[in-house]
Image (tube, rainbow, N blue to C red; front, side):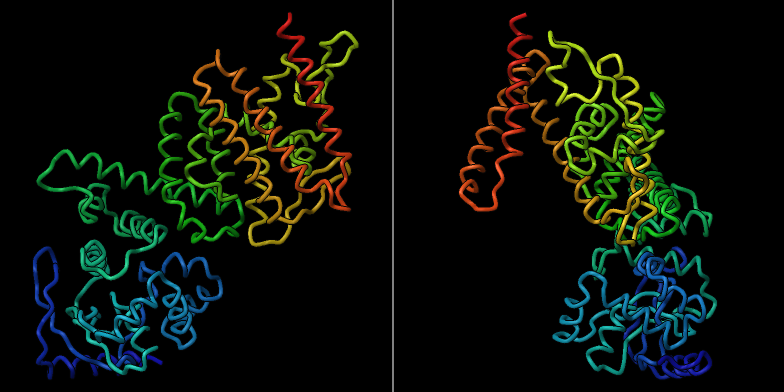
Length: 464
């Protein structure tokens, strides 16, 4: 357990008076300075609850956050911080390195014993049974703004041990702007996203800062929609997805605000079900209407639920009359008549918006409530996420296959080609299971009859 403040200050002061260690050269107050280095007991330093290495993790752990907010230097709060640091990437690798080669670079500490960096090293050293840590000591008048400058400089240094997680980097940039009142250019320069000798990098550096600000704003919007249930750390692996999301949204926002809003909702759905950035590239308003709506309709559960989302819940459809016997030969495959396409398009986007809300609000819960013909019903949330993910993957593959056709003139033949391939696969799947005692051929025959009707209808259409 860390010593109290006065004891820490006295130990560090005594160590400074007696030190014979080589100083550490760092960038301090806009120039290179030498900080005195001392060797002190680990109990003479305090893990930093404001460290941007664990800020997102601390926010996402309600129990740890409550302990730190109550008393950051208490034994329980410090143990909670240690647990978070042990879960950071490469912690075990760092510990093995310290075991083999001991501490090579000193950490940095305030005169009050608060670690600026080396928090992870301090925990690793303690876990290895070590008693001491080497630290460079800041001047007694060091300010929070100056400590942020130093933390930034250490973070972007090539020799730094661990990179910050994506969400911690977002929070650091946000703190610099909102807490330290730094402008976008200053932040970009300090992160070395602007090269002083290359004026052309200024615009790109500033835009990157703005993009990170937008990323955090979107994440905060999703968190707010969830009532705080979606943790910030859920987005640590979403950097590439958010980057491409942002590029598409910003390109569309000034041209068509409604289309931009619909893209935002659909891609947010992709984030919530972990679709992946490559598949997200195709997600936009037209993709939702042309591919996702059909993929959702084909799912046993989602096909019943989605028409009831975001609207009045009746899900009614008007039958189309195209054939001689009064039945639409494609009725099994089309949910709306052409005259209703505009209304159907609006309905699917309202459904997506409602689904996003429900999945967000049910984060960290086992079930999600969805509408049915008999009223609201609770479904296994993980199962619904998997079903939506599967539908979005299917829609992605359908869109990709359509793109392979080259153009609209080739698309009909391409779709038939893909259908034939699926029938071949269906036959292969049938041969693998048809002799099993519990195999029921009834559903297969029903689907096969639907396929025959669709093929007959296509023949009649081509014949004119």
